[in-house]
Each structure stands twice: as C-alpha cells, then as structure tokens.
Length: 404
Image (cartoon, rainbow, N blue to C red; front, side, top):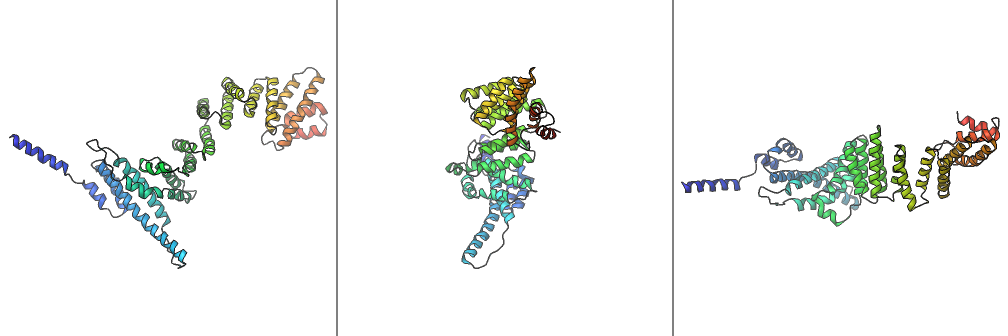
C-alpha cells in the first residue's frame, strides 16, 4: 500500500513538473499578427497560468510588433541608400504604422518585464527576456518623441500616449542598465510637454506627476516650475483651495529658498489670504539675509500700505526703487501712500507739499506704463494735479478724462 502511495505521488510530481503551456498561451504564441495576438491577450490573458506564461505572451507581442518595425526600417534604409546612390528607387513606407509598432513594442516589453522579474512558485526569479528586450528597444525610444511631435493638435490623446510612454519607460526596470550609462537629454522637456498636455486634458494627477519629473531636470526646471505653480493655482474657489496652494508653494520654497519666483508668489499668497504674520515672517527672513532684496521690499511695502502704515510703506518702496527703478507699480504705490498722508493733513500748505512729492513718482509711473497695463496711476495723479494746479488746468483735465 505504501509503495502504491509513493508511486502515485511520484506520478503527480512528474505531471506537475512537466506541465505544458496553457491553451491560452499556445494560442497567443501561434498568432501570426500583432492584432491577432493582442486580441487573444485581451480575451484570454486572465487564463494564463502564471507570471512566466504572461511574460512569454507579452514577449510574443513584442516580437510581432518588432516585425513591423523591422519591415519599415528596411524600407527607410533602402530609401537612404537610393538617395545616396541617386538611383531614384525610393519607396513609400508606413510612418503611422511604424510609430505605432514602436509604441506597441516598448509598451508590451514593459509589461513583459513586470512578469519576467516576478518570483515563480518557488520564490525564485528567472529572468528570460530582460536583456534582449533592452538591447533591441532602448535605442528606439527617441522615436516616441518624433511620433508625438507628428500628431496634429486635434489628436491630443495620441500625442499624450507617445510622450508619456517615453517618460514612463525611462524609469522602467527594463531599461535601468542602459539609462544608467548616459543622461537622458530629452527627458525633462518631454515630461514638461506631457504635463502641459495632460493638464489641458484635465488629468491633474498625471500633470503633477510629469511636471515633477520635468522639475528634476536642470534644463527644464524653470519652465516646469512655472507650470507647477500655474497648475497649483487653478480652481482656487474657496479659502481652503488657497490655503492648499500656499502649502504647495511653501513646499517648493523649502526645497529651494533661493528661488525668487516661488518666494514672491508665496509671500503674495499669504498676503492675499490675510495671513500677514506668515507673509511678514517670510519677508523678514529674506531681508535679514539680503536687505536689498527687491521682491521682499516691494511686498513688505504692500503689507504696510494695506494696514495704513504709510510711512513704513514709503520707506520700503523707496528702498525697492533704489534697487530696481523701472517698476511702474511701485511708483504708483509710492505715490498712493504719499497722497494718503496728504489727505490726512489739516494744513493746506502741508498737504500741497505732500502732493508735490507724490506727483513726480506718479509721472514716472505714467512714463513707464502709459497704457496702464500694470499700474493704474491716473487717479492718484489726478488728485495731485487737482490740488496743485486746479480743476481747470489742462494737465488736470487730461488726467481726469482718463479716470472716467
């Protein structure tokens, strides 16, 4: 009896050890075209026995996609030779099909990789396809950029498909050895473009993912940072939205306290939220490091102006203008503060002295920004002219007309 049990167990073990491919895998491996294999994968992929079978199936998709790639590459190579030899034997090739085949090959190779590196039933990893797929596909990745650039504006989803695969494939374990050998010079810019397109498609999660990748690239960092701030600033309907925006800016500033753009946006956001304590704390820290920081002086002046501390605001604005003397908005704010001091005077002579001080600053604002695109200097200048020259003066009437 014992011998029978042992024999039976041996037979079961032999059966398991030499189990063949599943019917689902056999069908996929027999497919003649990519479309046929892909359809089978979609319909029967869940029936594949394990990660090993799934890796084989996805690799079959890669093989079939590469047949199309190789076919079109042969035509392109032959055309190049014909042009060089001037034989005139140039044949058309399937550009759209070539681009799609490259996409199919890389996408499915990445899927193959996931299963190829997965432990088997015994917990062991037996990689079969990694090296071969890396070697034949890594050099094709830049074609994804060319493909994305060739897509018309009305087919944004197609462009996104190619650009995002280029970026995603960079971090895939499939290409880790090849990627480690040299810096990907295109990654940052392609990630930035992917962020723009996904944002336009209202996919904020993807937009933030790709803009973070772009920000990590020194060449794309500045534009990517602008985009990051712009994305974060959208949809600020409630105070909670603005608070979240401030938190995002604070995180960016903590990573790079030297960034003037983030600093200015953060201080202004705290100001807009009415959190002058946080704004002033940020400004004072910056001014302690650099007393002549233009942005900090300008925003500090606004904080003083908004709390009717006009003398302190005037001091900040004058110091800011000593650093950068071509900002119409600061000249306007300076004139506004001096006018406010004039309005508080009980003595007419003293009032006129303040308006005499204010007018040149507002006239400077006018010369810098005659169309009032940045600063609305006309009403405070009208106040000056009205008091100094009277209502009937031509200068007063000219500026008065602008206020209406």
